[in-house]
Image 1 (cartoon, rainbow, N blue to C red):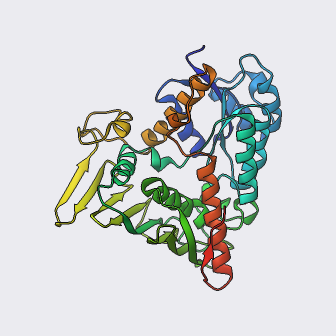
Image 2: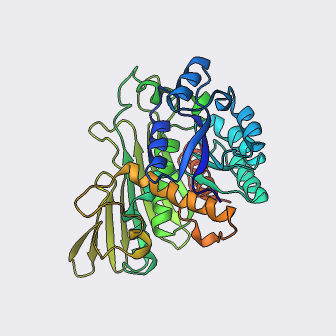
Length: 381
């Protein structure tokens, strides 16, 4: 079996940030090379990106659908595709590659409706394919360590959660933040939500991944604060989990002074945990007696299942790019295991289409709650 996988990308043209970030993250481990792509709807930009990445002319495609069909028939066709396009296009593109027998990695939110996400989940299962949704922050070593701490009962039963993700980049009238913000603020490309889809799905996934808690119902107030905006830019959500615990989520794009401030505070019956994404290499663990233990990545206290993703010694910072690379590392190892018939479900250590679906169900319930006067809405799978 070949040691290096082939992959392709849809989106990620010369004007974009996220496509380049995915490519850099994949390159960190040297386990896959990009050999195909459809990088832009503009022919010139598509060809420019293809040349820059060294893609041979015959594998720089004019459409994602042509790419899926062609690559599936090649002996050296791609082993997986990376989809980094606006939200409204995810479903059709993901579906095309799954139907062609190609594993998928897709940015979040995975689709704009739960119906679409359910169809993709069913299709991936039917085709026996892997599907990753890139909730990047759950690739951090410390976020994986927190998951193990809570699973092992070190803070007891989780009672309440406070989580937030404020940004300030879309705080001003007549400013949509350039290309990255324009499509997020456009209902035709982003769907029915902006802030909650972009940031709230990260919050939902972070809390669900770390605690293992499932949401029972939500009460949401979704506001459009900046004049001229059509979609939400500031959201507050009350949460009740299936075990009776409660939570409060806040997401915002109008919080001047905040850059990328995902923060999670988890309070249990025997202690609590505080983790801030902008300082991702440490976590504060507070015990019943009030003692505070600040754990840093790079030391022996980090459990083996999380420590295996450490790339540098302590004091040499690992950040967002390494976190994304850790997700891809597990994803690529699982693809290789599938190819040599050694794959087991327990090997999956990345967010799957099921996690993506749960994020969309959360968003839809919040939207329904807000539209109906801020009432409690049950989540139903």
